[in-house]
Figure 1 (cartoon, one colour):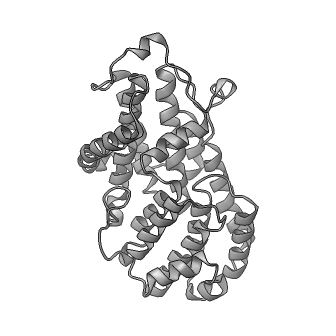
Figure 2 (tube, one colour):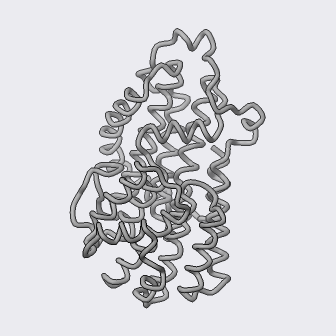
Figure 3 (cartoon, helix red, strand yellow):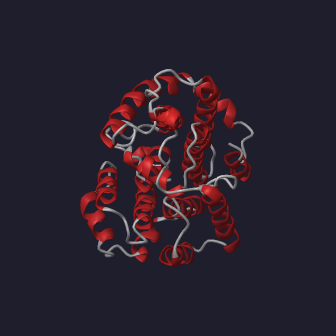
Length: 323
């Protein structure tokens, strides 16, 4: 892609992220910071224009000349729209308008939307958990109430956490950008499983809140992932984002492995210890675990690459539900 096309893809992704108009102040700030790290002239002004709905698609889409750039822009938009849940009416209208202005074949857009829907649907609690699922975690059983926070990994879970993190990293290597939508459901199912292991039945709202406390904003995480993977040539500096700032595309799988592995280890400590950690303690513990997991992610790259070979986006929903 040309520089102009990359800028166009970035602008469309940003417009998609705000298509529902419901982003929190924290989410807006995170997206603004990430976007301003890209070498786009007057990046801050463009962010403001998008937020104020003064950057119409009719001005952006002409930048995308090649079929590859147009297809990528649509995939990115779907990715950002569905990063925090199934698209609403406003987002669906945005995507329909975008597809029309990009002149994409209906069969192509339908295939992308279907893949995204299948992956987004996997974020729901496993069927066996749904009947008793609750938003507020119940009081811990007596045995858990006095149990100290676990500091040694449970062998019964550590393998699951590692294998899930390897799969999450492998997803980053798939050519379809919407495949990355599978990372969050993979992470949420991991937390479900760990909670259930320690006697807690959780619902999607609780798990989303748990992940959010750690600073893993759904939309900002998705935007940073696409900036790493597809817009790396625009990155002008490392700037303290999700996992220590934007980095080259080659580091994406290692970063995703590290984030997922640290999340799983923290969930194990949290639920094994009877949910005694405060929000601040959770954040601090996560950062400490993430530092160690980053080095582990670099070492695990060969296994992540091996896991990606033969991995098909069509199989991802079944793999995620099988956790």
